[in-house]
Image 1 (spheres, one colour):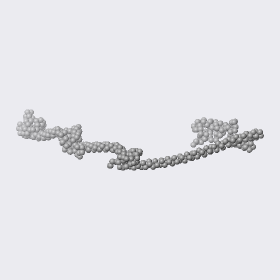
Image 2 (image 1 turned 60 degrees about the horizontal axis):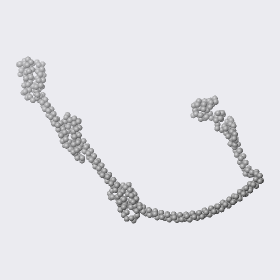
Image 3 (image 1 turned 135 degrees about the horizontal axis):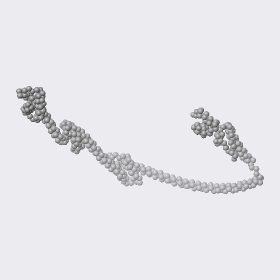
Image 4 (image 1 turned 45 degrees about the horizontal axis):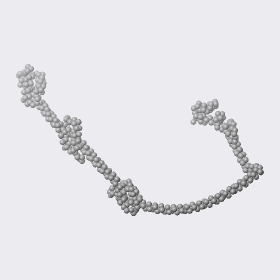
Length: 429
């Protein structure tokens, strides 16, 4: 909606003499909006009067263009239009009255001219009468010709109707024969699909339709009483059915091969599953025989591959379980050297441990010899200080560790201890 201030501005600009386009550009609105704001104020505008399409209206009965009648308000324009309409109606009434007067009084002509015109009209009537007689005779002849033609056409229609009736009877008889023959063919078709197909074989509807179509095609030009019809039907059924049977046989063989292949794959997958399950025995075997330090992951992987390939080739496809003994045999064979090495290492470790214990015992025997040695040599050694005793003990222990090999007797160790103590006490003095 346009606000009042904008409307007042438009009216003020119009009052200053600005055109519609200038006002629209000045206030930035469309021309129709300017017209809508100004409304009836445009009726007194010279510019709007000049632009009106009826300022040079043409009178329908005049060759002169009417001058523009300046009007001050819309009622004066209505009056001007009404005057033009009344002038047009008066002119039309005048012409109508002239035509009616001529019809009543007739034209004012000279008597001689009227007489001459009468003779011409009499002559014209004679000529017209002659022409009418000629036309009447021609019409009679034409009617006779038409009547003859109608009689001939009627006879021809009768003959054509008779021929048509005979043709219809012939066609009806042929249709009856064809229908009877078609029924006979349909019976033979049903015989073909009901009695000529191999027993126990599932024949799809599409092949049955092919058999029916082929039998119908073969019997189309055959007679019902012809000899050997049933043999012909059986041969036709065999010719149509044999490709389907061959195809089904090929499919059956392919399906058997596929099923066998699937069964082989299934058994092999089951076999591989059982073998993989049996490979868990490898870790148990290695752990049970304490071979972990001697078998790394790479060696385990090779042993598993060896067992897998051996069992996959030797075991039957329909196995239900993998014998643990067979797996252990393979492991015993594969880890024979490792087992021997481990046993040797264990024996050596055991012997080393025994030797270490014996050396420890021998060392203790040698160390116990210190007190006894000091006691029996107390006169020669006089007084031994605690410091000297500790030094003798350390010296004895060190020398014994170097001298003892583990295969000596207690007496031999005691002798060795005495010699070490002699060297410590008496050689130093």
